Length: 138
Image 1: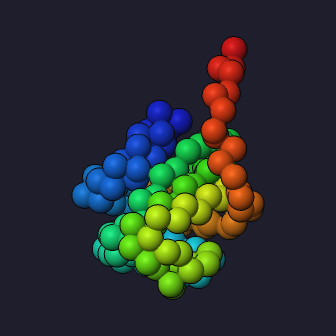
Image 2: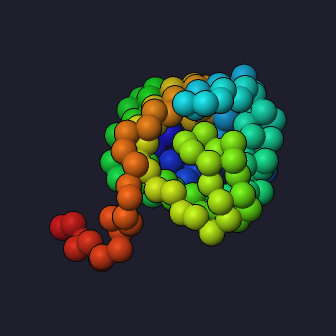
């Protein structure tokens, strides 16, 4: 997997295109989240489709390192609550609330597919650090 393919995966995630998204996973993929651990393609699809009925989740890549069999990234994540979600993994959310955080995510690869995804919370953002434009890197 190269950087362009990983960025495409993030775009599919943000678009909630679960059908194409799960093609990036091995059949026995494991997703290790702070409060849940869905297994298999269908388990992960079910987890996100259930969650996304309550929140609009958007990911942005802050840091990305692509290796031969692993990917390490820092993902800025924004959750916009659509309906009250008292069981949200970070904290209870009410409709209209926005929760922002940065997570460390490590992906173990088998070929061009994710075999294991490990997510760890790094930082919770009280205000949106993306509110001001950032100068483009040269």
